[in-house]
Length: 234
Ligand code: ADE
Image (cartoon, rainbow, N blue to C red; front, side, top):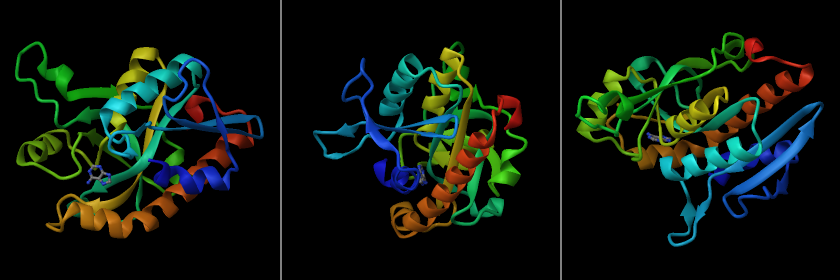
């Protein structure tokens, strides 16, 4: 969502940019910081409902356009996420993806499709970034709902998820099929297991979490721009 990216876009003074072959696909902002080219893509706005295109559908479109047109050295999906109180997480904590990214609402109980439904797409092994960004690492799991059904809950447990979001697995899936290294970064706005309403927590903690996200992303950009970094430096 633009509201999640706004502070970062403003702080880096990124400017609106058009990608030629996919006009209108989503808002793109870009800029150069040292020798680093930063491109921020916001999922397309849904004109019919006049809201940000959250969830996996628009994420897939967005990731595909980025992989086709930009061919990034590293694709990062950043935003907010739900965390687990029982996992010693605090609101505003930043998480970096670790291992694979899963889906918790793509249940296809047919032998050939079960693993495909669940996913498990690779992320870059980030050994240095957790310290640099003062971030935790964890397993991310994606679904198209902000709240939590019983079925999603048991899949999240099965995935050993530390972070629940609505986009990262879609980006990871497209990145994987294009051979692009992928990383997800999320700050926690709400606890999935607190018993309090998710929308209420999300709304009241949103500014705090996006402030923290901006700090983490700015630190990441400074680190990447400092000198030529390879994926192994992450
Ligand atoms: N983004 C922020 N909080 C979330 C949650 N609980 N589930 C999915 N996406 C989120």
